[in-house]
Length: 362
Image (cartoon, rainbow, N blue to C red; front, side, top):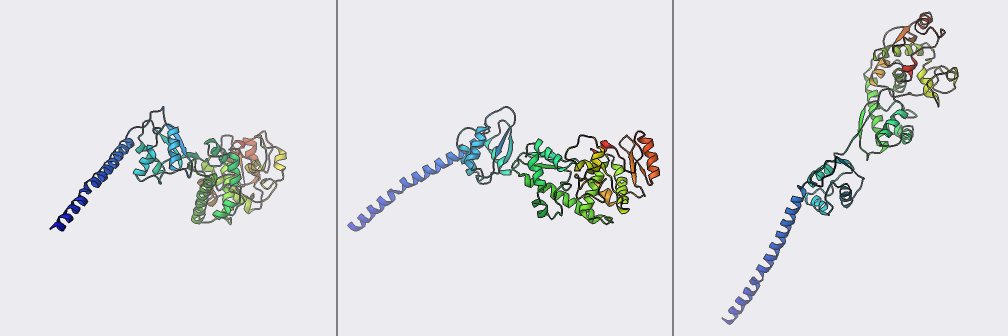
């Protein structure tokens, strides 16, 4: 009996220690719940008010602590360490993406977290007009602050990207498709150039494949001629006629005598083509050299490419400006000389293909 009483007392002592451990665990649980509730309220409390929209750049490979610092410096979130804990509580601490983000006044930390996790950053719009050269496109890139013009030109003329994309050209002149693009500040210039070139290559390949004939031209030559057509006129309806003139000249072994190619080959151009310019020795001077120049002189649009692949019918070999943006087309030199006397009476008749200087410098 005494032994049984002793065992009973020991059991009571052991069971008597359990309520203390239970209370402690309960207290910890209560603290966790309270902390969670406070963080939950923090996540839904509007942040600091500031004037207008605030733009924050989150560099690649930024730590959670660094991201919190960028946001606090811009007064997007309160100046304390709760944002890190809130991001961990929401399971998004490792899902925040680099980028350039715009935040409105009074957005909650939850709003901020959702924006960073979604990657919905600012995209800068670049619209490339038809007929722009690499240098001009580089100027657009520099204007929106995504890189310098010189850096862009160097990348577009580097052989690495054309080789990687299977483009058989010395540079990407002509292959940067004129379109509207959206880029983030964290994208590299190489990624931007590649995106434009991939678009250009796809459009060219699709159009050449769908065309009834390519007139014996390679895709690169199609693009080269299309770039000249693009620069020769601002009248969309004339592109098939311009293409026909040049295709007829090529088939008869005549020089193209296209002013835009002369301008492209000059290091400096002051707006006027001189006799010396027409005699200048460079691969792009189609007054001196027969056939097509070695590559495009600008980025042609879809209509210019289509004009080369589907030119207008006719035996035209010449055209002259009517001084209103349009041209008079002729099949013989005699017809052309009469047109020159009519529309350009101050200029002596010439066998050259006359055209609007303004359209050529478009």
